[in-house]
Image 1 (tube, rainbow, N blue to C red):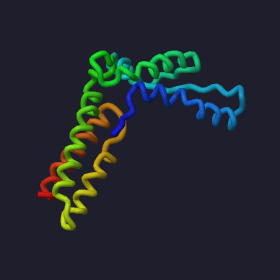
Image 2: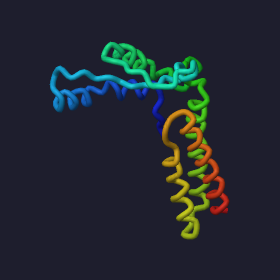
Image 3: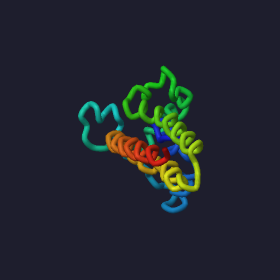
Image 4: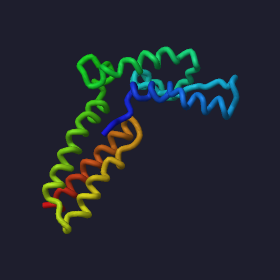
Length: 148
């Protein structure tokens, strides 16, 4: 029930184990770059990803340290539509699973399993993710009807 937000992206990009693997494979003098398409720049009309080098690591460290703001009123990224939808999905999914468990029987087992696997429909970022959420919700309605 986790989603990859800006704080998680920062944590993943700063993963020390990954840096060790990259250096082991390419040598100590390897240069790494991150190719990102931040939502703010996308909203301002930037169509392509930007390339950020090691100089950007302190910004990732700050973001990683801000993870305590996740889901609070102080979360600067939490007001985006996709983040609001992601937070709502956790409760929606829990409710779907609870409904499926109450109605679980040998006859409804297949529909319940398919319902439990629905989050796999949600991939990508921004509009791609929102399209996946729409598919998730449509299929969930159909499966809940089968459970009745």
